Length: 156
Image (tube, rainbow, N blue to C red; front, side, top):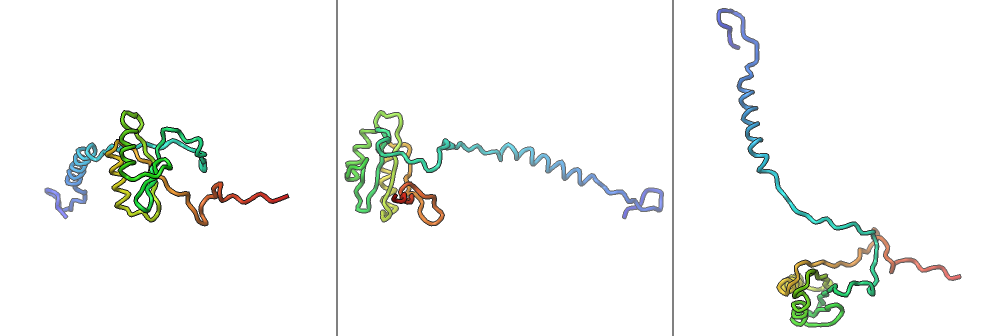
């Protein structure tokens, strides 16, 4: 404890000068670092669609392209069996000058990952700029029943 000048009593006050210095330094650091910490991330939020809405195949838009990769290395392009090279030539011609360059991609389960990535890369080189990945409907005990899993009506 420090002693006051000219007195025999100790000084019991807290010296807050170092505390104020530390707080001011922290304030300056936060003022400088806050604008640098702001990040901007652009996201596209999908529009709301009612759940379990199934579009019949006859109502699919005619300009929609679905590419299905089969296990044997061939592809189905809108349900037409083609080789990968034939499909990429078709995609290049079909997407040339088209404003919407969306491709829906599906692969059978036994397809190797590197083949799927190769086909996606070739599709991108053919002019596709947006790829929608198609998946199978979930199955199992927690899955919502689809129209194919609906129970049969009782016979009367």
